[in-house]
Amino acid sequence: MTRHDGVTGPRRHNMMNTEDHIYWFRHTGPYIKAHRGRTFVVYLGNGVLESPNLTTLVHDLGLLHSLGVRLVLIHATREAIDSALPSDHPVIFKEGIRVTDDLTLAAASDVASRQRVQLERLLSMGLPNTPLKDAHIRVMAGNVLTARPIGIREGVDYLYSGTVRKIDAEGVQAILNNDAIALISPLGYSPAGELFSVSASDAAEAVAVAIDADKLIFLDRHAGLEDEDGNLIRQCTSASAQNLSVLDEEQQRLLDAACRACSRGVTRSHLLNFHREGALLEELFTHDGSGTLIAQDPYEQARTAGIDDIASIMELIRPLEESGALVRRSRERLEEEIHHFSILERDGRVIACAALYPFTDTGAGEIACVATHPDYRGEGRAQQLLSELIDEASRLSLTEVFVLTTQSTHWFLERGFEPAMPELLPVEKQQLYNWQRNAAVLKRAI
Image (cartoon, rainbow, N blue to C red; front, top):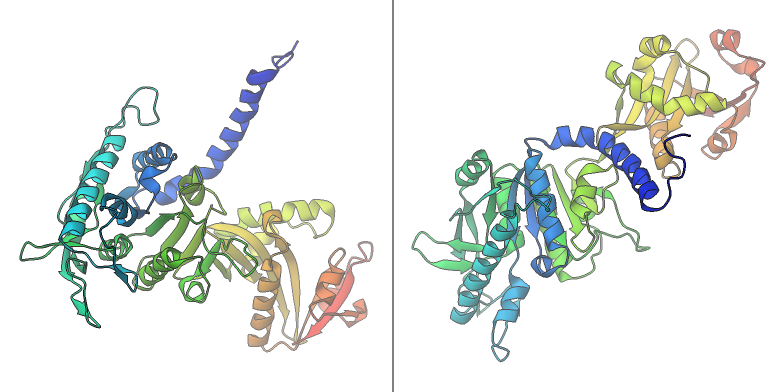
């Protein structure tokens, strides 16, 4: 009788969950290593502190802190200020900016204080039955944001509405170096001691740039950016993001801040939905994330492969070798030929590869070993690498490229290749042609 005989119901379910957890944990290892010691600025958008998922989100932030991530939290107050004002008090916005009078400034100060206490309280929980057991997270705040008045624009006096003048980067770094979470409210102080209400998204952007943060993360009501068909855009560059349509004024404000931050040195910005439980961890510890990533440079990069990529390439092509789609290559052969390979890398993971073998005497080049990870097929990765290799062949002054394939004939035909006879291959390649495999020969002029 084996151990699993008779196991049904919850116990069997828990066993399956354990397997899933172990698999997930093993694959988060590279991300845990990559994020340790990094600095993330997290914008807690309007509605976060009233969300049913708030406690879970705080636990996730605590987990990030325990994994060595340096966190700066900035909480939005706009909607809470609206709720705190008397119903008959006029609320005036011009170009998305609130006109802050004395009563509104008092409400902004009260809301910021209340939210700060709420976050400090939640981050201080250490009960045995919570994920923050024995965490002892230190939260620190301070007057690190210097503001100046917006002043009068087109005849409108914005009164106590301010804009960021300077961030005390050394002060923020001192908090982080003290193994504490920095908590910053959207209030700024002038050298004259005046208090101003500032945009939380502008504050988050300014802080991220000032402290050279690795990530600026916006937690909002939307899942991220969408394409014309309403599909979530997983990643894009800051340049392409600026040409996308958005769902509302608030998302536009966050998008603008995210793109500006990337253009000013922040490596990556993220747009996430705080209503999605676990969205923050999913974004940071899985390959595809949960929202939209905006990067300075393309998130997926094509580059020449190196020795360190051999294991990843072997893992990628092994299923295709076993199916007969690719000729088997030993590790030793890959080591000798690695300089011919190009790869497409996504967040440190090789998701596609292809090789170009030039026959310079005949002006021809062989494109071989085109492979894409199953999770990313059908989305143009192989086409991207093929284009890269054709461009490389042109730079080498080759006049044509050819492929030998058994299962991808139509794919290459659709990309401008034409059938050819094996006798038209370079003599060196003809001598290696495997007649038993009977691969189709396709050519394309450059």
